[in-house]
Amino acid sequence: MEERIFYIDESCEDMRIDRYLSLLMDGFSRSYIQKIIRDEAVTVDSKAVKASYRITEGEEVKILIPEPIELDIEAENIPLDIVYEDDDILIINKAQGMVVHPAPGHYSGTLVNALLYHCRDSLSDINGVMRPGIVHRIDRDTSGLLVVCKNNNAHHALAEQFAVHSITRSYRAIVYNNLKQDEGTIDAPLARMKNDRKKIGIDPSGKRAVTHYQVIERFGQYTDVECRLETGRTHQIRVHMASIGHPLVGDPVYGPAKERFHLNGQMLHAMTLGFIHPTTKNYISFTAPLPDYYTALLERLRS
Image 1: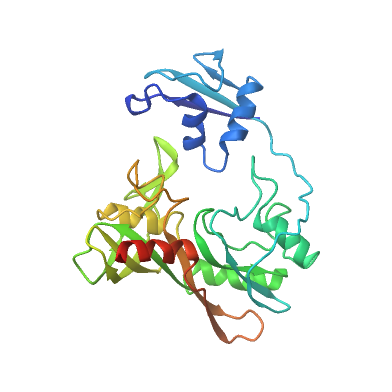
Image 2 (image 1 turned 90 degrees about the horizontal axis):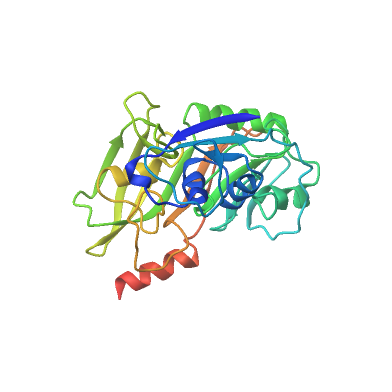
């Protein structure tokens, strides 16, 4: 049983306790938070509360998180957009809205559930039963390319390339405001924010993070950009672009509270992925075309 304690600050005044905790606790869905609240594993000033409880500045919130249960994740016949496949790897073009691996509140409908059906027992097991084959991930609401490893040799080889930042990764993003420079580099270290563990922020004590960007098209109040990762930190593009006054359109965490397009998440697509193949040792590269949700917004901005 893991215990976590938070103290409510003024910015969270009158927020529902379930929403507050789902924003604060990375990797835990709101439905899972509501479940442990029902189980009276959440107290405010030592008293059990309901999910609808409105929090007040200065209150102490204590959460007792049950020990994780190693589940047998079920294989599910979910269609996959497979860009490439051989005996060592798969390249998947992930749809926006799909969670990569199971986590509390998301034990079905994930990429891993689909991979277990497609690959059966042919997935690396280095990251355990919850993340077979997964060597890296992209956010649920980010679409695009990721590589899956079918065996441990491939996993080790790809993990080493990710560790030394030799993987080629470029993204397309639509951001707020007109980027004045045609291109630039953001070199700013990132770490989890101490007062909000769900968010990443620029922190001098964090890990170095470098993003190169180039303008593709301008629309006055919006800009379509290509972002190339030199490093690959959690939420890197989302935080870096927000830090220079250009948050991603549709970003529910780092962008404006309201956006006029009613999107399903941040406008971010993992477009290009390149690396040294673990067996052939040849460099290979893949590109995923812009998805419909992205091109639809581009057309709206051009009209």
